[in-house]
Amino acid sequence: MQIDSGTTQEFWQGGEDAPRASVRRLTIERCRIALWWLMLVAVVAVAIMNLRFLWIDVPRIMHRAVDHLEHDRFKLFLHLSTAPFILVTGAVLFRRALRERWPRLHRWGGRIYLSAVLVTAPATFLMALRETEGPLTVLSFATLSILWFGTALLAWRAALRRDHNTHGRWMVRNYALTFTNVTFRAELHLLLLLGFPLPLVYEPVRILQIIPNLIVAELIIRSRFLTAAKWSSLRLGQRKEWSITRTNSGSGTGTTANRSGS
Image (cartoon, rainbow, N blue to C red; front, top):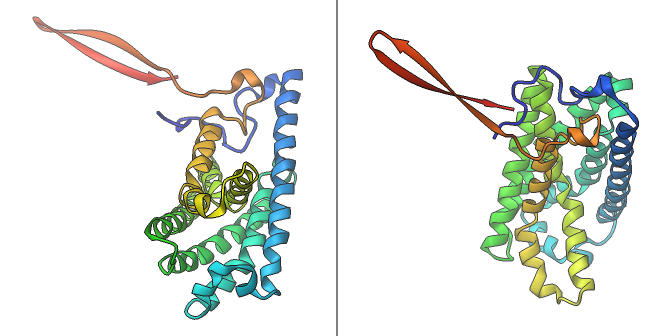
């Protein structure tokens, strides 16, 4: 399955249906704006909560940090200090009005965001190797750090090539990983509200945290939710059309199968 690899329009722009916008476009646009505001409120709330780690007694509030204070103090506070900025900046960059009205501001914001991720991800990877909550937690944190770094690198590379389609797709995937800072807390507290004990659910939720986010990211990309002009333009999959072409060569007959993606 391909993701609009051959399109001539940019991922971040209005898409092929933009000139034919109608009242229904307002509906999907309002949905995008509402979801963006919901995301922004969530990331600002979590960012404010994360900022408290910079001035409070970390070992008293964050028991997991005790394992890192002796050997990973610099990496720990690098992660704690950049996380709020990365969360909020990434969310703001997804606002289409910002990209269209102030493209230079969007580009510089993107450079700062990706630089922060590329600096922080190696630190979180090294910290993950010192996790003491089990090998699966180590694997989860390490995988998250590797994917976070890799998607940021690919997004920056695509931006340098001015390949806006590819850049946009990698940014969606990268921010889906950043957003685990929010979704992990939401999923954990939901299970606690349902009556599950913390020791039972903490590690499974932590281990599986990236899977729902990456699934949602791929659905957003493949459906063209961020660029579709109207609801009918959404695509949850691509149909493959096969055509059979017969060619006559001398006394023999050849058959060629051609496949095209719609």
